[in-house]
Amino acid sequence: MFGKKKTKPQIDKDQLELIENAQKRIKQKKRLYVHFVIFLIGAIFLIVANTVLGIGKNITPLGKEWFLYAILIWLFLFIYHLFNVFITHKFMGKAWEKEQLEKLVSKQQDRINKLKEGLLKEETLIAKSEAFKDTNIKNSNLTIIVAAAENNAIGKGNKLIWHLSDDLKRFKVLTSGHHIIMGRKTFESFPKPLPNRIHIVITRQKNYEVPTGVIVVNNLQDAIDAAKSDSQPFIIGGGEIYKQALTFASKIELTRVHHSFEADTFFPEIDNTIWKETANTFHTKDAEHDYEFSFITYERK
Ligand SMILES: NC(=O)c1ccc[n+]([C@@H]2O[C@H](COP(=O)([O-])OP(=O)(O)OC[C@H]3O[C@@H](n4cnc5c(N)ncnc54)[C@H](OP(=O)(O)O)[C@@H]3O)[C@@H](O)[C@H]2O)c1
Image 1: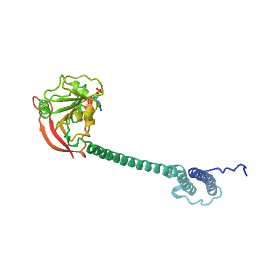
Image 2 (image 1 turned 180 degrees about the vertical axis):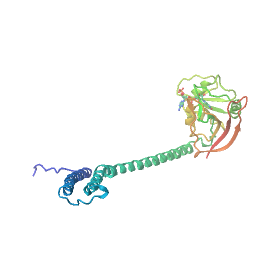
Image 3 (image 1 turned 90 degrees about the vertical axis):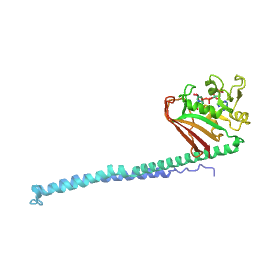
Image 4 (image 1 turned 90 degrees about the horizontal axis):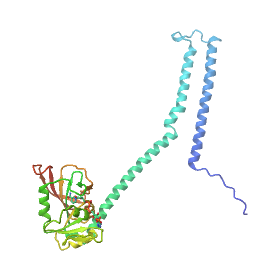
């Protein structure tokens, strides 16, 4: 009753297939070997039949004995057999089929992965839009103002990369009288606070010291809250703050500098599925401006 149960050896489908294939190969090679032996004996027989027994002595096409042609044809058939066993089998045999199948499966897998990525991107966009809708700052008209190169470069070594006086003038006109929200590094890149604007500096430092009138907060949400009374607060940089604020902004005032620069700080890519261009003014290169640039306004769709 409690005797040992006999365990049946388990062979799975793959193993069985491998064994069957191996048996098939052995058979194929055996047949080839037999063919070779028969060919050797047959060739000797044909030579003996002609030269010793005199069979077909008078048959000499193109001046050669007939058995030479017979042996050549047979040799050709044998080579064809050999080719089938070792070459065709290699390219078109089970292993080749399996390899092709694997390639096909991996291609399909790539396509599935790409589709998944696309889906993920779409989900992220929806989540971002939802996050924007959910925030109570929807009507706060938070505007990002930035100057970015063609490669989205915005700064290097905590400095701006270019000097475009008309861009600075526009920055002054648009932001004057408003709250300007910035990261601690951007604030430190100014020699002193900009006149006629309320500065809100974001830092994780608890006792960050600033001149009187400058507001210090510890996160972006607090910065937006601190600017609540303003009908149009501006996010003025830098890279870290732009990245975080893009979800909450309803407008981007971009100065696109038509050149690419080496940089260590970049503006995020503007997603055309979220933002629509509503204004675009081109500015040529001149004595005061080393590069061409465009003032572009984007509004959330
Ligand atoms: N082209 C333009 O329009 C433009 C505009 C502005 C700036 N810039 C350039 O941008 C560069 C500076 O940008 P950046 O990315 O290096 O620095 P940044 O964004 O100006 O400031 C980064 C700092 O902000 C604070 N911070 C960021 N996220 C925070 C959060 N969630 N909570 C609390 N504090 C947070 C941290 O300060 P702590 O380390 O103190 O915690 C962090 O080190 C400079 O090269 C500047 O010239 C360019």
